[in-house]
Image (cartoon, rainbow, N blue to C red; front, side, top):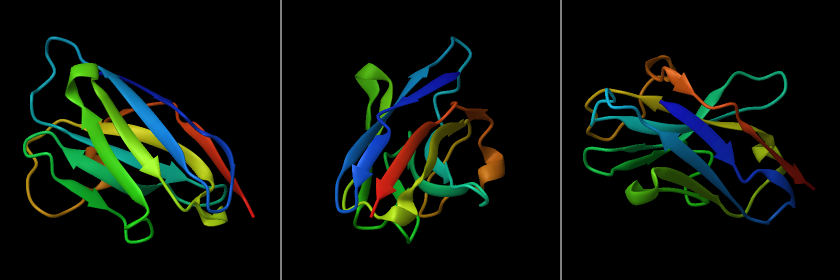
Length: 128
């Protein structure tokens, strides 16, 4: 699978951005998967932000973004969105989308090691 992110940019604190991740699946791609959004700030480890399960559409969020970020998918367009509202300077990072091909259900965020396919990322900068 190929994943291409877009939508990053520079925004003032309190503002909003919507990131997009377009997924190109090949004929061998499994039907069950999770798509996750991750971010990595300079000098910090990559961390999970949000993910969505294809099986049941359930969504999951890191505590730091709950109530501010919303993940959604448009299966007709093979696109996963991350709506980010009330942005803070701490949200500044490169944002990546990634795919994990396995049957997922339940209320949990898969380990980052389960995501084997990654996009190149899009920069989000939030000024104070």
